[in-house]
Length: 501
Image (cartoon, rainbow, N blue to C red; front, side):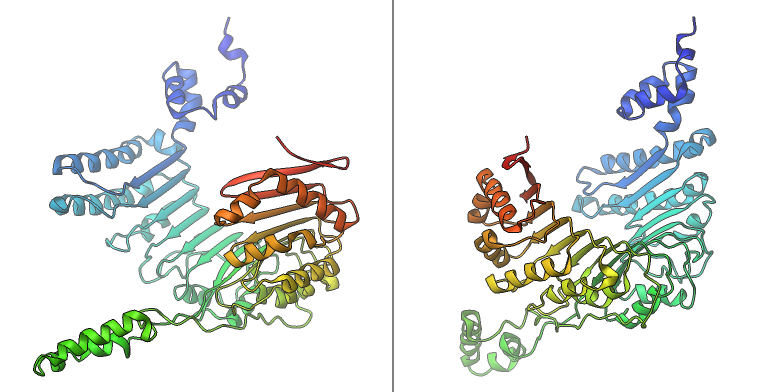
């Protein structure tokens, strides 16, 4: 009896698709039927990483290089196996090595990308491609091999140079670009669904190439705002995206340069004259340096804090570009501008941007959520401000209670040391919005005292009990404390709070 044939291929795949690679290899070697079934799983994902650190002798470094090249070139040489490859991940992490074998390390760093990108077009069925640190240091042609992949739909580029920006427009559905060069003119505005753009000056040419083009299928956008790509251009670009459902905005602070004037640098600049003045110059130099090092003046090596920027996006009255937006993650200031235009918003994450003043508060953003357009908000994540005292804390929670009557899930991120201690001190007097049923508190880098407080199981029970009483509606059912990558969840059973085991 053919027992193997009595079990469908779908069931075999369900049984074994999540097992280790060695087990899949053994299964593929068992018989022809299993080979045909499991080889596509074995070769579906191709990972090529130049490992950081080559410290051995030349023979060892060369051997590691040749083995890495053989790993992907042998697959590419077999059309059947190459056809199974659907996703490729490439990264160059080689930064250090044996200082006595720099020629071998340089050959490693040059030959692997040359062979890889020459071979890449042979994987014609690749759907997803991620490239990290490909050719910033070593010149390698990257764009042309990418353009030869007919089925490519998901592309991630991080620290990759694409030449002069000329080339084919690709029918990508997802494109992620981080801190590279010349990513302009690569995506098709008609096909792109997910777009992630990270960086500063390098993003402006990309957005310029899309000027006046509508992106009808784009539903997810992550975009960095900066001096080079200011709010006005971002506002205009958002109006080109009529069907956005989720939006993430980050604002880079204005860059400042160290003030290398005065202080010890002025003394050092005068060394030739001072040291030649009968020996007294050396004493003056040492005295000046000592005076500076003991706090006589500001350290000119440390940049001044970046100037605060008013974060505001200007959308025209009655703008409908963001009417389908359901999720928003952005700094306080951007939320104030956007919330009146978001009738479908369900989830909001408020961040404190380094570009905003240290005294910036989320109160205005929370109050903006009271607009009828944002009345459907159900989930809020809030990074607490740097300036946080009992009065500020009470004002923030009061604003939430008044502006967000339907809020059911609330997360607080306590990032700054002062904010953590102030929140800890005043936490037992806070009234939650009436409909909140789940509260999550993430405590980042707690002090020893704070860790003892937030990591205490009794604290979670006390917080749940007290907040439930102050809320007054009985809606609160779960409190989660995230401390040092560990999570304690406390739930209400009847009127009793207990830690979930």
